[in-house]
Image 1: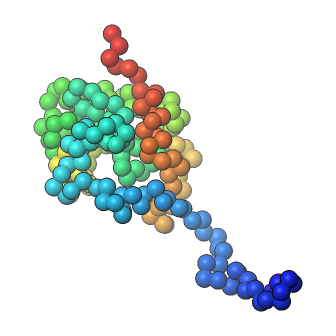
Image 2 (image 1 turned 90 degrees about the vertical axis):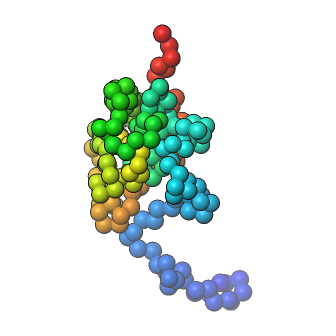
Image 3 (image 1 turned 45 degrees about the vertical axis):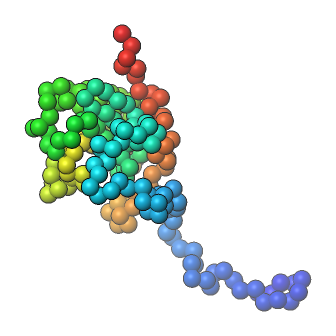
Length: 187
């Protein structure tokens, strides 16, 4: 190909290494902060004991109760993936007090209602992985996952590319869910 203005040969980009193909590229530059700046707590520090000591924004906290709190998962399966954690550092559900169990349950119900209103999800995956052998990433501190699901969210990204497309930044999701959370301090 020749540029008519100066007869300089211009190489076609179709011959470059990144030749267009049928694949879509997912750019997630916001995640570099976790990789480059070491935003992960120290390996000996429990992230679920640390989060309540931070501001809601820094800790990704949506709601605080008396015995438990709700926060966004730092590495979500879907947008709006919440965790309900007791403040107390306990590893398994059988160690929770009746008050902790009741509040974890109540916060889970409220989270489902709020996520349904905010994101119009069609269903949920809810569960606890207790112990490293059971898949718990943070095995020392009990936490329940609340993962919103949509009828149209099934695709082959997770299976083939081990990739999840997340359409919103964590801060945006946290602000929306927190704004929709009912005021529990009212009489």
